[in-house]
Each structure stands twice: as C-alpha cells, then as structure tokens.
Image 1 (tube, protein in one colour):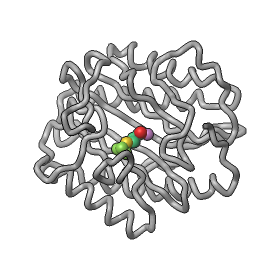
Image 2 (tube, protein in one colour):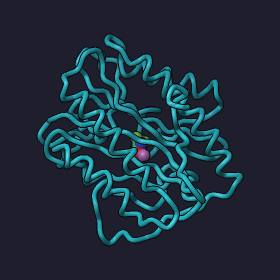
Image 3 (cartoon, helix red, strand yellow):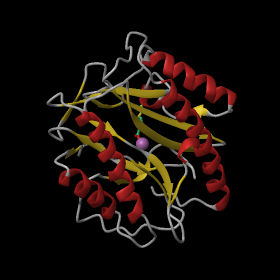
Image 4 (tube, protein in one colour):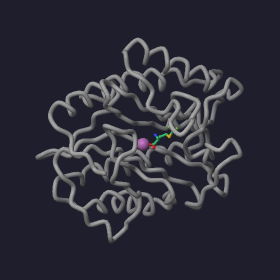
Length: 254
Ligand code: MF3
Ligand code: CO
C-alpha cells in the first residue's frame, strides 16, 4: 500500500528526520578506531530517549538492536556487538530509523574509519553520488524506474555492481511501505511519482558482484564474493517542485 502523506504527517516526518539527522551525525562523529559497534548502538539509544523518539528497527521482525552497523563486505543489517571494534581502514555502514509521533524516517551513511584505501574512499563517494543522481530525478509525474536507472548508470559507469535483491521503499506510517524501489532499471516500473509520497532511497554498491548472502545470525547480509560494499540512504519527499531530503545531518544542511 502506498500512503500519500498529508500536511500534518509531513510535518511530523520533518521532525522525525531532523532528530534522526542529529543522531546520525553524532554516530558518524563517534565512529573512530577503537569504538565498538555496540557502543554506537548505545549512543543512538540514549539520544533517541532524550529526543523522545523510538527506534524503528528494534523488534522489527525480531531485529535485536536500534541501529544497523555493517563493516566492509557486510552490505547491510549488521548487528551491533561489543566485540566488533572499529579499526583503521574499515568501511562502516550506519543505518538508523526513528519514529516521532507515529512517523518513521530512515537513513544511513558509509563512514571511512581512519585512513582507508583509495578504492574504498571512491566506493563511498560514488555511492553517495548515485543517491544524488537518483534524488535529482524525484519529481511528481516521473516514473518510479528513473530512480533505479540513475543509480545503475552512476554505479556501472564507475565499474561497480548494484545490489539487486534489496530495495528502497516507501516510508512514513510504517518503516517499509510500498512502493519497492530497486536500485537498477526495471522498465515495467512506470508508476508516476506523486506529490506527498515519502521514499527511502538507498543505493547499495559493490566492488564486485551484485550477489549477496545472509550470515547464520539471520540478519547480516554480505557480498557473495566478500568484496567491499557501500550504502547511502535518505528519506525524501515528492513535492510540487523540487524534492526534499528529510534526513540531512545538521552538518550537511546549507
Ligand atoms: N534501514 C533498513 C531498510 O532500509 C531497515 C533495517 S531492517 C531492520 O530497510 F530489521 F534492521 F530493522
Ligand atoms: Co530503508
């Protein structure tokens, strides 16, 4: 089901996204050599409590934590753990969702820990760029498949693989609403975007194959070839004119 959001819901989603952005910025800043992914989860939980929001992910299909922390070949859905200590050269994917007055927002970033290889830095950069290429297309009346087409073009022209088995999604009243948003071109997805749609656009780009597998913890998804993966996600609104990002970190706003 696609839910078009009314003005009141959009207002709540704006606040939801703003709070998310503040927490995400803190997590990015704290993501340094020596900290554990569990400590990052604790920081997120404390800030959520302080801002009177709840975690979208905790308990979602039984997911045990409030954020996802995925490192290197882990694509997404890594579970924070006290033994997972960040080290220089790691590529960390942070993913967080919060609920404010019933409205969810969902976003994530890839963070380079200490000095990473030039390739890892480029993978992060192209992934971020692929999001903004897609974001530029978001306008009422544009076909849904233009999002995936933009991500795929950006990724493949840089020689990177696009994860195909995970998708972006509608977001708002629920963490996952329709439509599903593949990150590659699907000609049949000719639904026009409508004003008031709120979408989580989340390209996941791989160094190698697009194929993935799930670890025995039932959550962590890794690249099938164990090569590097990067990810970038924002909650966006389709408007009458230019699209809007609801989940900027304060440092990204201008
Ligand atoms: N951010 C993820 C997504 O975009 C959701 C994480 S799933 C959870 O779909 F189970 F970890 F919550
Ligand atoms: Co999402």
